[in-house]
Length: 50
Image 1 (tube, rainbow, N blue to C red):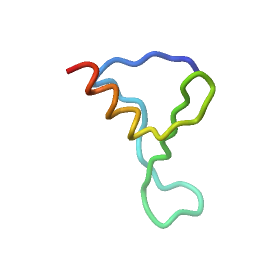
Image 2: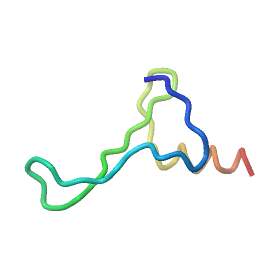
Image 3: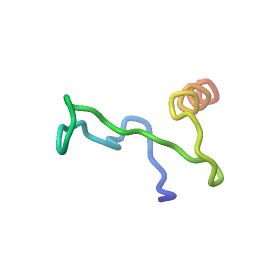
Image 4: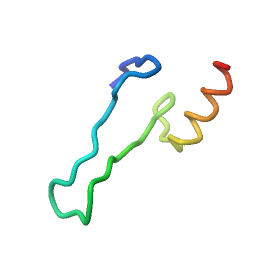
């Protein structure tokens, strides 16, 4: 929690443990303690860094 990552760093792996129908990765993100759409967050951050 609160970890900083750099571009290209591996932050998760997909797998199929438990009761699932196939491999998947659960991805979530929080900004200042508020859960946000992780894909939108990445899109916004990529625009800021380009």
